[in-house]
Image (cartoon, rainbow, N blue to C red):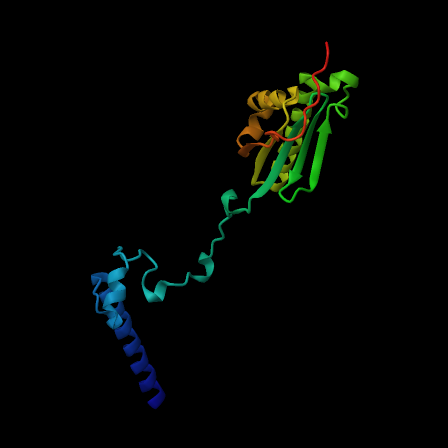
Length: 198
């Protein structure tokens, strides 16, 4: 009998607290728990719908639902595409953010011999093969961004730029985050090589 009385008094006091909490929350009274200054700093919002009451904070047993996180929450993988373009060759290197090489292509590895390694077409083929590698990584890793670095003034530099704007670079174009020119410019310094005679 005594236990039943205690249980009923607990239930009635809990219901009183819940009613007072809900009433103060609905009226947005600044005197809840005597924290007027704290409540004044919090922006006023409407009371939550559905599960705002203390009894409804936790879902029912059969009401759990698991959301698949969007791709934006996947950590971003940063890659670097270096295009080193010299008068004699074009070397395109795809690396991770720490500089470790994933893949590299040059005019010679693309099948061009001797002087043909320095041509526009050799640079274009290097760029296209690098783009295919990036597309494969994007398919497996998901969220990746590419930093593009140019070095040198050979024909391969222009070839990579044109390939990026063409249909071959359509999927890679939207992954490019930054474009940087790393060509070293000499101001003063040592004596330059003599001009070739033609």
